[in-house]
Length: 304
Image (cartoon, rainbow, N blue to C red; front, side, top):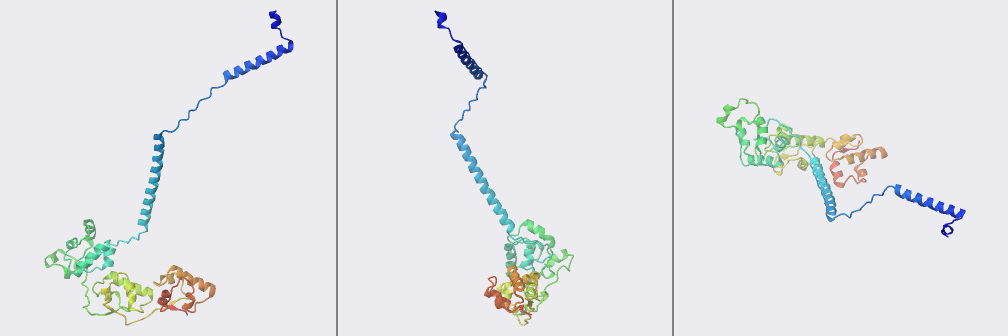
């Protein structure tokens, strides 16, 4: 009876064998397969979120700081710097340009000039150190270059100065004298109170670059010329050196005080495309030239 119950046909035995084989293979595959690592994804804690936020804020703040520092450096770099030229000078005679060339700030230079305007005199090098705003380091730097003219020294101090030829006493014109700025050289200009080597050279240099003054008002265009200085000048000799607008090159054109680089380029381009310039009216067609520009240039342009 039991034998009949467990009896299988040949085909049934094959099916049972195949099924058993598949089950065994499946079990073996399960046992031999590597265990998968369980990756636990932890949600970020509030502290981690805050840390990341702080990092972003810190990075943003750093970028702002670096940007401001860069702008400060650029601004400082773009600021024009005056070349310091250390040379012997008499603080009783030096004008504003000479004082600035020595490395003094405009504030200190102005204090020196005001001190002299009120009748103050520098009798010794040490007296120059009392100027308000002048630092001890600046004085020690300039001290070897200070030369007090004989006429300004105290009698008790003359024995301490061996060199007597460092500065000649400069004669100054009496009030009411008028100097012809059209022909005066630096020697004559320095005889005007308040004008020294620096300003006198600036006047002559500007006059040469212009090609001569045609109006006394042009003198106001020179740097450091004050209204008080204007009272010493006249313009009797008008001698204009013309600027050949059809033959002058770029450098000569742009060197004129009344012409800039772009205006000089316009002149060259016009000559190249349209030939010689016959009158100022041709330049008035260009936006680079204003009516004021052409009026000032009319005294200097030559169309030969």
